[in-house]
Image 1 (cartoon, rainbow, N blue to C red):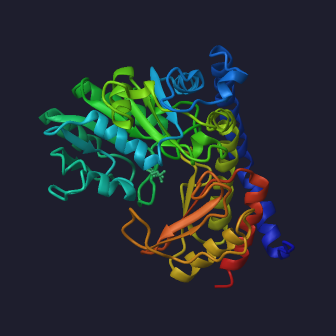
Image 2: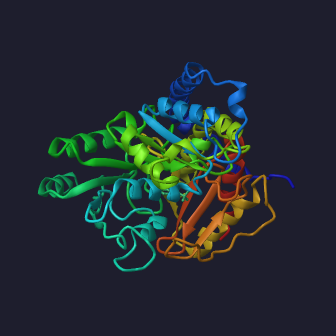
Amino acid sequence: MKFNFSDEILNIDSKVKGMVAGAFAAAEEIKGTNQERMLRAFVENRVSTSHLTGTTGYGYDDIGRDTLDRVFADVVGAEAAIFRHSFASGTHAISVALFGLLRPGDTLLYATGRPYDTLHKVIGKKGDGTGSLLDFGILYEEIPMLAQGVDIEAIKKRCAKGGVKVVALQRSCGYADRVSLTIEQLGEIITQIKSINKDIIVFVDNCYGEFVQEREPTMVGADLMAGSLIKNAGGGIASTGGYIAGREDLVEQAAYRLTVPGIGSEIGSTGSALRELFLGLYFAPGVVCEAVKTAIYAGCMFSSIGMVTRPEYNAKRADILTSIDTEDAHKLSALCIAIQSASPVDSYVQPVSAPMPGYDDEVIMAAGAFTAGSSIELSCDGPMREPYTAFLQGGLNFAASRLAILNAVHKIQKV
Ligand SMILES: *Cc1c(COP(=O)(O)O)cnc(C)c1O
């Protein structure tokens, strides 16, 4: 197999490389800041060889696990954290956090509109019998987003009315047609909510946001946040897991849901997972930088061939996603097929759309990844609905991502 791109495509590539140079330099700066904070946390917590081997059974006194939690908490400026392979996914971590915080009769307010698809069933419906939040008698409200960001006046008005226990903010757009929130915007929203009532707990779904900017939600006032380790925070090396970080008392409440009330984060053996979690976390700022470069390049490339992409390639980024409106089911498929065919694993597999647990529409996914479903590795997916938007994310290595994107540009122009 040989990548054989036409002169026309290579000309666009050179033009795009020039256009993205400034944004790439900015991404490298952010990587430098985040990697320095990471190294400092490893040194200050005296990470040692003995922390890299795990425990069995109950996992009492697992110093590797406890040190890893501490390192992550320090890196994100949180009082405490649980950074574990025993979270099955980001959705699991978010669900554990929300069930940890909320009690029957409490109100959860999603202030960034309808949350990510897989959370719809976590919120659930009253009497659905699944043990969802609503099934447990937790009340739920949401405030739709406006074109430029959250509807801050509506959020303030609702918070002032009383009764809201937790406000949830989703940093990344996910699969929705909305903007992602920068850390500066998140900080401003949190300040406004706290000015109405400082006791309201602000929770942030931080999926896809970690290490994209120089600060994390817990550094700008978020009380608790959660994310996935097969996205940014696992650095492409963690093979499963999730995290919750924030205020110590709230992390403990969440840990009571992860394991059991009264024991929380004191148990949970780590088997052979610790080395890859430490290593992945250590790599995360660099890997996220590669993914951000991939997103910038893809945005500039696809907009250069006339497609609508978001965010603007040179805008301040809040996550690792670039969305591309293909406007056509066949183009969405062609794009995913082309990305898959230039992946290091399963390159010969042809993706087709199918129903996915937790998603409302059929989804097509290209994911030729070392870790199944990993989206810090180059992946491209989209729900089969108008305007057939492809969400491209990840990329462990920009040099390889560029080839996959050039391949996609080449193939999509033939549809
Ligand atoms: C991916 C994602 C989730 C869910 O994470 P999974 O690991 O796929 O369960 C939640 N929220 C957002 C914004 C996401 O991008």
